Length: 436
Image (tube, rainbow, N blue to C red; front, side, top):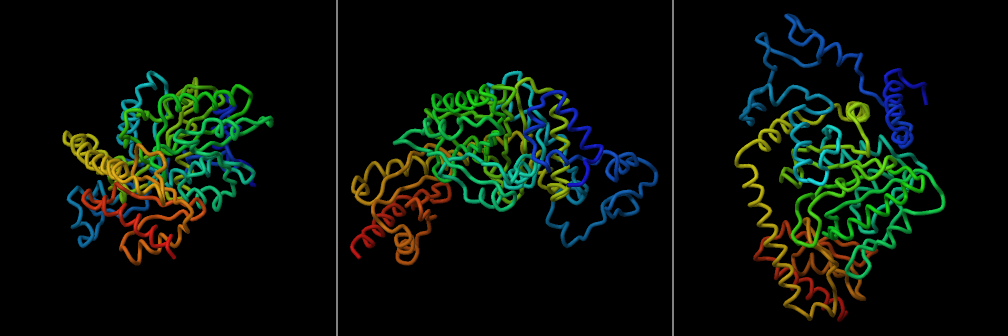
C-alpha cells in the first residue's frame, strides 16, 4: 500500500490521541482513507458566494440556477436546486443533525452520551459496505447469528474477504446467550467484529430486555479481557416492534457507553423506518465510551472520504425529501398508521398459527415479535420441493432457506385477508410433498 496521505495521518493521530483502540480497529483502508479537506472540494467551498465560481463540475444557467432538462425536472415538484446539485459526501447537514436528534429521542438510554453526527450513505447496504471498507480486513471474522440476511455474504465476504462466524440465534424459544458468549469469548485476545441485526432478518426476532442486557454484558466482558471490538448494529427494521417483551431501543444505546474498547456502529436509514425503500438514504453513526467531538469528527471525515471514494454522495433529492418529511407535522401520524397495518398482519399471523394445531405436523414457527418477517421450520420435508409446490400449484411465493429447512414469510407485504390462505397453502404444499 502506498504511503499514507498527510490528511489520513492527521486523522489517525486524532484517533490515537483520544482513543488508540479506535485506530487499531480500522482496516488498512480505514487508516488510509481521509476526506480531502485541501483539494477540489475545499477550493470549491472557498469559492462559494464569489461573483465568479468556476470550480465545481455542475452546469449552471446564467442566473445561477442548475442547468436542467425539463423532461426530467417535470417529475419533481420541488425547487431544482434541491434536486439536481451534488449533496456533500457526508450528507446535507440539517438531515444529519435531524437524524442524530431522532436517534437520541428514540433511544433515551443514551442520555447525555456523546455520539457522532450521522454520515449519510446510499441506503443501509451502502452503509454496511462503507463500514466494511473502514474496518474489515481479509483476516477478520465477523461474528453474527446463523439466521442472517444473505447480502452480508456479498458485502463482507465477497467485497472484503472476511469470514462469517456464526452463533445460534435461538435456543428453544429464546436468544441463545450461551452460544453467543462462546463465539465472542475466547482465549485469543485481539480484534473482534460483531454484527447484530434486530429486528432480525429473516426471523423477525428482537431480544427481550433481559436478553439485551446479557448481550451487552458478554461484549463488555470481552472488552474487559483486552479485546477491541467493532459492534455493528444493523438497525434496518428499527422501531417495528410488536411485543411488549421485546426491547424498543437499539442495542446501540447499551453499547454506546459500555467500554472504551467497544466501538458501536449504528447503520440505519429511511428505507424501512420511513417506508422509503427506493430513495436510498442510510446513515452511519458511531459511539464509544468517553468519545468526544474530536474523535467523532475524525471518524466522520474518514467515513465521508470512503463515501466520496465509492459513490461520491447520496442523492440530494432523496435527502431533501427525507428531511422535510421528518420535520412535517403529519409525519409521525402517517408513520404510525403504516405501523398499525403491519401490526394487524403480525397479530393475524399469530392468530392463524394458534388456531391451526394441525400445522405442527409439518412445520413450526420460530420465535418472532417484530420487523417484516417470520420463519417456519419444516419437519422432515424437502424445503425446495415445498417451495416449488407453493409457487407452481398454489400461486404463493415465500423465501426458502434450504440448508436450514426454513421458509421466510414477509407478513408486512401480505394483505391481511390473504394471511390465513397463505398459511393454509403452506400446509397443503407440505401435505402434497409428504405424500409423494
